[in-house]
Amino acid sequence: MERTYKAITELILQAKNKRREKQSGADSIDPIFDQMRGIDWPIKCTVGPGLEGAIACKSRVGFVNGSEGSLIYRGYDIFDLCAYSSFEEVSYLLLYGELPNDRDLASFTSRLREYRFMPNTLRMMMSAPVESLNPMAALRIGTNFMHQRKTWRDRECAKPPLEDAIASDEDSIPMETPPRGEKRAIYEFRRPHLDRPRAERPALDDAESMESCMHLIAGMATLAAAIGRLRRGRLPIEPDPELSHAANLLYMMTGRRPTPMEERAMDVALILHADHGMNASTFACLVVASTMSDIYFSVDAGIGALNGPLHGGANELVTKMLREIGSPDNVPSWYRKARESGKKIPGFGHRVYKTYDPRAEVLAPLAGMLAETNPNCAKMLLTARGLEEMVVAEMGENKKIFPNVDLHSGIIYHALGVPEDLYTVLFAVSRVSGWTARVMEYLENNRIFRPRSLYVGEFNREYVPLENR
Ligand code: ACO
Image (cartoon, rainbow, N blue to C red; front, side):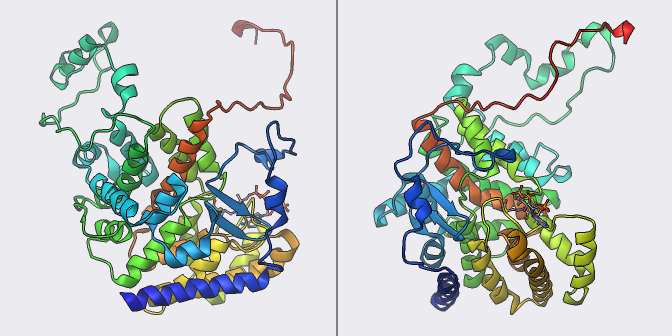
């Protein structure tokens, strides 16, 4: 265990040194930090399509320096966090702003361990057609199930009138009268009547509390693994409270306790994906939170945004693409065709980074280490390297297109035995730390998000009745 830990730490520190060599004046504070200090609302900035350049809010959670290619969480360099920290500690850091001491970390970790167990949520998940849903849709459903009957808003604001609730009891559904005497307008549910689930512990009274954040961080890992199993017609595996978050996640997904190397690789991947500035999914979470909805609905929005192929969905597309290319020899012809078709190549390019994504610089050597014992991954990795060479040679300096985090993450998940349909789900399992941290921060000084659009449509059109059109 100790040897593996050291080997991976060494690998990450080497990646950090390489990065430093590339940066000129790496020890000095980048001017962009200074430019940002002291700025207050209203902020003047140039906004491009896709809100490029827009400042959504102030934040102390994390920062992406796209020209330098650096990423920090709460002031700590991502390379150092990957080298020395754990996902549990990083989640605490993101949520509370400081690294925990021994006691705080032990108590935080023990809360996460408790929240891994979600029998009632999983019971509800098993009543949904998980096997035929997009896994990210199943994850959204799962986070909604996590939130049911728990928050004060459900109890106080959204609770149905008692008579309606009684009338909608499962037993009474077949007695419902179809509208206007129609015979086939009503679904019939013929599920066996199960015992009412016992209340899940611990009870959550506030939908925007640190408890909800911990519930989501721990619970989404359980959900992800359960979704993977249910999709394959298998029952979810009960969490093991003795294992770390990373090891337990792999255990619940694969049914096998991971090796120290696998556990550490998973941990590093979780840390790397935990937060990333004002990306699309984080912004989606904040928009929902800003309406004073609640954190479960906010995370739900984040999952939806992350699902897209331009964002978190790219990791799955990368491994599909690498398989389609087949081998390093096929890269040139595949690449030429892709460029001719004007296709964007998954795993490359970024709105903010105009150089190598530092996360890719950690994941590339990590994938290399895992590929040493996995020939299938070795082939994928060589193909990815060949593709990287071609993309960077043609579009690196010219268009500032470099590998992003998604180029190697799928190869790593593949080596860890994670099914491909869970790659984007895994991204969410990690990013939920950043989402919740930023929602909590934003709510301290909440103002509803309400941008405007540039109206370029017509005015004063005369309404023409349907029969005259
Ligand atoms: N392959 C080929 N060309 C690309 C790529 C790519 N992956 N990415 C950008 N370009 C080109 C565009 O075609 C465009 O060229 P043009 O100026 O000649 O029209 C130029 O670079 C700028 O691209 P935009 O699409 O305007 O960049 P934007 O900032 O809007 O998009 C994005 C960023 C969505 C990440 C884009 O690079 C992309 O689609 N990449 C592939 C998908 C991907 O890997 N997404 C994951 C990103 S990381 C994450 O979200 C976790």
